[in-house]
Image (cartoon, rainbow, N blue to C red):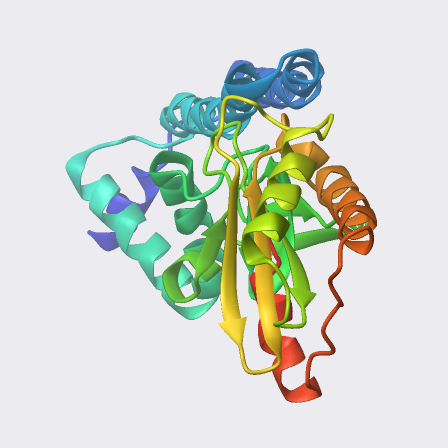
Length: 275
């Protein structure tokens, strides 16, 4: 009885079925390849939310194409009765449990990521200390490019256990923070006005977003932070460099002195400067 069930699991394989399956696979590969080539080309010619929306279509199209191909191909080779479906799911579950647990977990996390969207192409994220722009979302990994132009592949598996910091969360606005450290004996209101003018006169500034200058008194001096937004998230490092250079030039013209931060506190302050 069991051998009969096993034999009835598969259909009679003919040349036509094989050719049809090959055609479906080739068409699926072509569609995925075209989406990965054409959509980034279109996105690079758009700005702000339109660019991010087009980039976000890439993983969605890939998932739809792959699932459609599987739905088309499986019935060509397998007789999908209730018994056969249960048998296939049982065998697949055992294979996943013993051999491919981590890999399949990353695949499932990739499907979850496509719909929950903790990151999208064009987002700037930080995962386990690695910060960069999401360039591509694959089925198993997300590909980011760091400010040093290093490509890092992060498994979607990190969704289950790690923290994901998203600086712009699918939008066109990304806050940048630039810090200055001064000795305490100075006119704080005057310094604050100068730093606001520095931010408002930057050619990279996004005028539709607010500019805020915050200050915090420390035992060694005063910590100033400019919080502002560049026109495009990809300009964040040029924006921060511009604010830093012109801010230092403006402060040097004032009766203020730059503070020397104790080594034990410099690491904590450095973490606050990341956008």
